Each structure stands twice: as C-alpha cells, then as structure tokens.
Length: 111
Image (cartoon, rainbow, N blue to C red; front, side, top):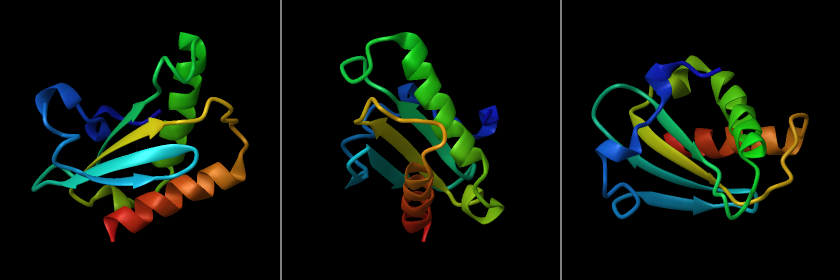
C-alpha cells in the first residue's frame, strides 16, 4: 500500500481541477499540477457512476496504488500533484498494458 506521505488531500485545494493540466486516456484521465514542496502527491478517484460496488472501487484503487508504489524514486521525488480518475470498470490486477500505461503517463508528466 502506498504510504500516507504520497497521498493528496483534495479538500485542501478546492480549485485543483480548474488550475491543472489534463491528459485523457481510454482507461483513465490524469489531472496534474506542479507545486513547490513535498514531492509526489497522488489521489485515485473511482466514480460511483463507473463502478457501483464500493468493494470493486476499493480494489481498483489498490491496483493503481500498487503500480504507483513500484515507481522509481526519481519520479517520487518530483513536486507534482496528480489525480487519476478511472473511466473504465473492467480493470484487472494482472493487466500488463494498464500497468505500462500508468507508468508511461506518470513518467511523461514528470519530465
């Protein structure tokens, strides 16, 4: 599980979605904004409209957090706030294409 130091609290930044850059993919959308301190901060949002059961929403969040946890330290040290909004309900743990897509989009954002 991803440690608390990497989790983003969206309640503290009310205008995050208005002031950020956006990248839309088929499985998920990435919203990101640079900041000045604290390294990488990430929040995963799985809308109830996309996935009805809370257990399935939590499973998808765990999949994303486990991929993010395995990122290299160079990416984790970048000063970026990232919010990932999941658009697809059929996400599996062993989906290698999804893992590569998540890693690729985060690497592209941090460069």
